[in-house]
Image 1 (cartoon, rainbow, N blue to C red):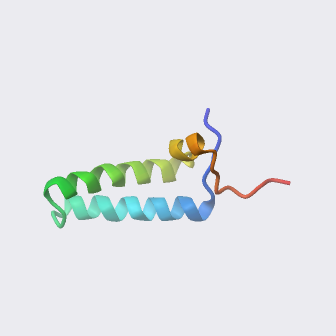
Image 2: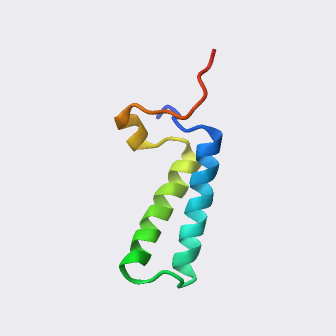
Length: 69
């Protein structure tokens, strides 16, 4: 499968951001094009935070995971 490339703080931030963006969309606070952007970014943030793998990090060769000794 995929190698985890997100540290715990990164994952928590992504999950919280995803929940906030989805809540803003579903409560009707953000509408129109900005609402759709919030929905898509919220879904992506929530999914990557839950799984622990970010495809963009993998492409760029980044990782926020602590190095295992």
